Amino acid sequence: MKRVLMGIAILAVIIVGVLAVTIFADKKEEAKTNFDVAVLSGEPEGIAAAVSAARNGMETVLIVGEEDIGGLMTSGMLNFLDVSSDQKGNPANAGIFQEWHEKVGGTIGFDIGEARAAFMEMIDSEKNLTLREGVELSDAVKNGKALTAIEITNESGDEQTITAKRFIDSSKDADLAIAAGAPYFIGGRDIGLEDKKMAVTLMFHFNNVDWDQVTKAAKEGVFGGGGVNGNVAWGFSELHDTYKPHYAELTRLRGLNIVKENDGSVIVNALQIFGVDGLDEAEKQQAIEIGKEETKYILTYLQQNFPGFENAEIESFPDQLYVRETVHVQAEYQLPLSDVWENKDHWDSIGFGAYPVDVQATSPSDYGYVYGKPVQYAIPFRSLVPLEVDNLLVASKASGYSSLAAASARVLPVGMTTGQAAGAASAISINAEQNFRELAEDKAAIAQLQEKLKEQGANLYAFSEAFPYEGEWFYPGIKTLLNYGLIVGGYENQLPVDKPLMEVSFANILSNGIQRINSSEAEKLTENIAALRSLVTEDQQLTRDKAAQMILALQGLERENGAAWDYLVELNMTDDTIYEKLNENKKLTGAEGYYLAALILNDLQ
Image (cartoon, rainbow, N blue to C red; front, side, top):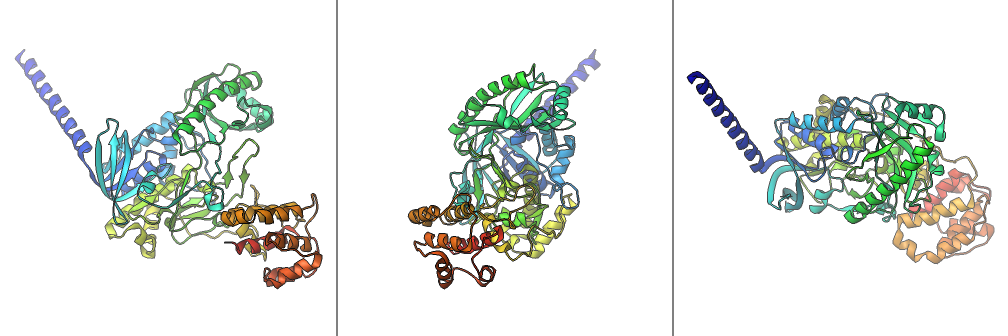
């Protein structure tokens, strides 16, 4: 009996001791406020950044606010991945992204519970990584231009200061970068379209869906048919037209991207909600409510018309919207759309993008644009280095991309690639006692970063890849027009360069181009733009002399027929290349019209 009591007593002491150590350890972690690297956001990009920094020997803290671990992939239910291949046919994005991706099955669709568990496993496996959940950024602390600390607030309102040598902002809206004073622009302001708001999406989560019937419907062409691969299905594009939204001015159903969860339920990415300011919490909440109501009507329609959905029910809704675009931080290198089109490599490449340039619709009256489909292009390290703030990298869809380039680079595999690079760069920066801006200018340091990334599984190599219209005399014109979103190449990267250019197309390029290149100048030229458009004859092919008349009208000038071209030449508004091509009045091809329009618009920059 005494032995039993003695054993119980010893066991009790051990348990109390373990609890005491655990509590002490927890308090110690909670109390720790000084780190090598602080990463903001539990989004996938932030997790990749924090894991990378920790693996490279840095004492790292991951600051997670109200979002779930995994952010958009988990609480946003975005479980249909936008994955791409590189020029060799391999996954364009590897490293930490691929490590996580393999944990959740390695397909384009994943189970949300597995995704969350995989992220937590990666976080928990790093002894150098401290996770702080349920805290929000309240302020940034700087010494001159150098970011030195952040103020955070927990759910009880208690404030704490976290100091670090380096910081990584992977929040959706560049919260830390903005708080620290980094310059930025919203939406399409860089091309004169500040009010451009791409559609946001509320996923819907259904149960009691017969997957075999969905598979059969895809193969039999229901709603245009689609593809099925294991636990994912996509297509059914005729739903664009056949489903009539209840909130017709605010929503639209596009083709379905469907992922079957492990429990048999399905999550669908298809509902577009328009006119939502992704930086306005009230507007986002209202959009969620509209999305929930529209989903009820969608479900009824699918029950009646889509095989496999007859008995479907709403299982749940995500906690957040899929907001495709808000903030773009201005960086040491702002990746332009032309780099994407040209499949361009960079000396400071830290990873690849290869996703189509997919600008989503902004209203029910348009269907968005695909400006091109690259083979692959490099993400420069300089695009992660914000202007005006030292010791900070931005690794998210808010990184230093033009608004058009971001339509490709915003996808999560690219974001996790930039996160991994940011984490590794933090270690190199600290060890070399260089700030990030100095590192970005140091070719030896960048080479060290690239080697480190390759050692740690990243897909990274120097490359060369041809691009459409490379070397053509008219390509400089295409490049200008592409960077302002004035021409669209589509998935095939084809422009009507050899086809006749219509008068209305030329007028649109000029008038829209002025607005995008210099909106303040466009306001002054309202009457001139109207005069330009008054010269347009519908369904009429553009001639050299009519093009000259339009250009002069834009300047508030007027000449008739051939005199217009001569006057244009006299004003030095042409160059030798186009002068030789248009030595007589003739119908213009797309190539000639693009080149001429770009000459005029370049003068306005």
